[in-house]
Image 1: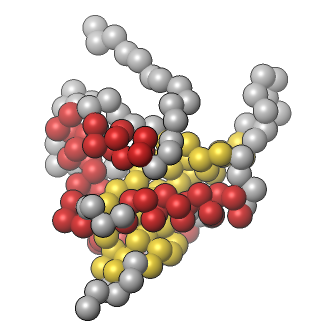
Image 2 (image 1 turned 90 degrees about the vertical axis):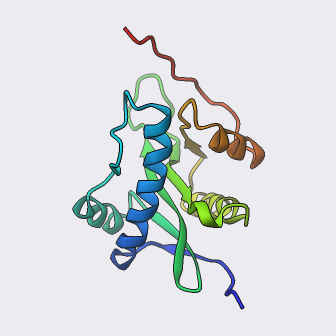
Length: 159
């Protein structure tokens, strides 16, 4: 029988599982935009992951079942202080959210997102934001389905 899903702050012991998922999400990006993302890579080295995991400004949450990490949410606290034009609201930016391909469709992503929302509220954030690359249609549909709305749109012209 499968244990219930547990979401917790990720730790150094999770690095091998995080690496597996980081490769998965990077492949989605490198397949869609090989001009920007190197094939076979991942976003962070293990040393960078250790630094990120130890920093309360960059909380990482792991979703696990039966002791196996099946998803993560990398987050970054952001706040514009002393800006002449922007308010100083506190934002929790989801830098990366991934669910293992083999575990999709089991509501792990939405559970991670709900956990991040509760965490953001608990630390006084005004909003939660994230970016989605054009071409990552599955992620775009998922984020719309769980209630996210477009805040801004990045555009480019390839020369």
